[in-house]
Image (tube, rainbow, N blue to C red; front, side, top):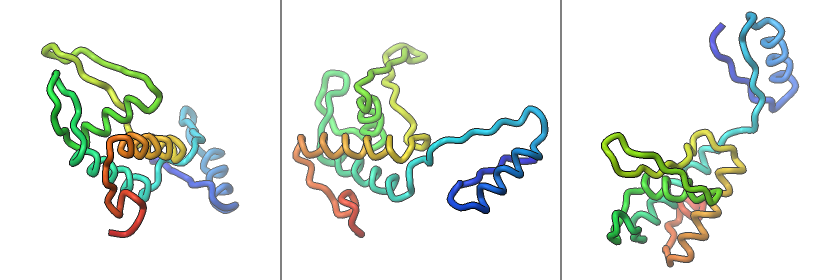
Amino acid sequence: MDKQVFVLSHSTARHNAAHACANAPAGYRVEIKPPTRSTAQNDMMWSILTDISRQVQFVVNGALVMVEKEEVKDILTAGLHRETRMAMGIDGGMVLLGQRTSKMTVRQMTELIELAYAFGNEKGVEWSRTSLGRDA
């Protein structure tokens, strides 16, 4: 049996999930968890990250510079729960560890989007239509 995923959105899906559990080989595991971020949330988040990366400078290695949207994501996710996690790089230096947004729940992604908006508004970011949830 390969991996199966059931979205528990109606009674048939629940029945199929229960059937799969009852017939799964010994040692298999079952995981019930909240839904992960939506595609719309993901699209909006990347638009927001793009707007911030084009308009806000960050202090990197003591200098005020523009950073890539992926780096903005790392900075914001590290600040999501006001936790700073760093690791020693393999050749020295420090690496800031953020969170993987692909594994975030809808609620966690909503919190990250709210944090990004608050940060961007504080920095005077002019939001694109897609960052505001409007079609391009």
